[in-house]
Amino acid sequence: MSTKNRQRRAAKARRRAAEHGRPKRTPSPDTPPPPSASSHSPAFIALTKAILDSVDGRPRPADVEQLARHPVEEQQRAVDTLLSAWVSRLIARSWTPSDIAEIVRRHAGEPAVALVLGLVAAETAQHDPATVAPEWRAQLTGVEPATGVSVWVSRSGLVWPDARAELLGLMIAIAFLPELEVVMSPPGSWRPVAGPARGVDERMLAKVRALLAKAESTEFDEEAEALTAKAQQLMTEHAIDRAMADAGDSAGPAPSVRRLWLDAPYVDAKAALVNTVANHNRARCVSSRLGYVTLVGFASDLDAIELLSTSLLVQATRAMRLAGRQVSRAGTSHTRSFRRAFLLAYGRRIGERLADAAAGAESQADIARGGSLLPVLAAREQVVSDYVDTLFPKLVTRSVSISNAAGWGAGRAAADLARLNAHDEIERTG
Image (cartoon, rainbow, N blue to C red; front, side, top):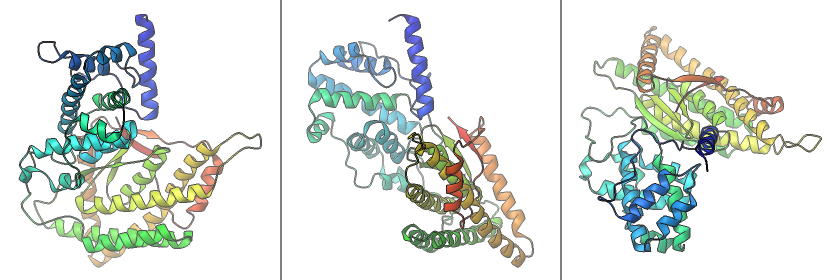
């Protein structure tokens, strides 16, 4: 293949990656180079070459053939060494266990998730438990440290050539992943924070969870929307109490960061819905092409925001599916554009209801406090915005458009009583 043809294929692969949310295959400056023969086995060198030479997520047949010439045991040892090194690299680049599980699940399937999380657990076990964040340990609940690729292959029931192909795809998927924003201290660096707990009130969160469970289970749209609005009201009241308590503390809390992964398809429409919830709860939402959104706000708000966002995504998806498939008179399917427009409209309409619930609670609380509340809330929002500017210095805003008027109308009708105000533009990075 000529150099120009190879360049055209690589450029096409990068465009497809950008369009479909796949990791770009262009090596970054810190992508590990092929190792030298003096430091690694020939099988390891062949394996690394197969990954770094990959185009559009597939290794070249010649590279696979070169790797296959070595004994199976050497191939598996090479996979153990390289896969462990790149999982460690992901941890160093601020990927949490749940982040790693999500990206692997999307590109390599559930069996590979078990293998990679086992490697994360093995890496974690090398550190003093006192230096591992409780949230990190929670994400590894029930995960045993990996004992090697050979054991995984035996348990999976695959023959080695098939297992090798899956493992190559897995390593290609994670080899080019970018560094993420820090949401949790990696193992070995966590230290407990002195001072009073500032998290969400568990009793309030339990009430919100119960309301949303009822909203998800009811068959009546009006009841679901009223229950969701009540949940938003409780969230706002709690946030007000927390904000006023923090206002009297000169060393108040700093904003926190959290990632929420969204299932395909219609990721941009679902991100718009999460953006709606964040905006009405004094937080910011930044979308990534990898398939997640980053939520930035105070810890006392983020738990409830994530809970409400997840519930609304369930409700919106259920309403969307009830609308059924959409086919023109000529037999052409418009289901995809209809559903995307449906979700965008649903989110916008639900936002109007959340805005009403939040504004009502804030107004009453401000009057009860003699007008001292709104300046405090405004100051907290400014702190969050400043933190977002620090985390995402190259943040851009992109418009979210629709191409199916019927879907937009159906979405607004489905959420007619739950008026959620989703912005038409979503902040995006990466």
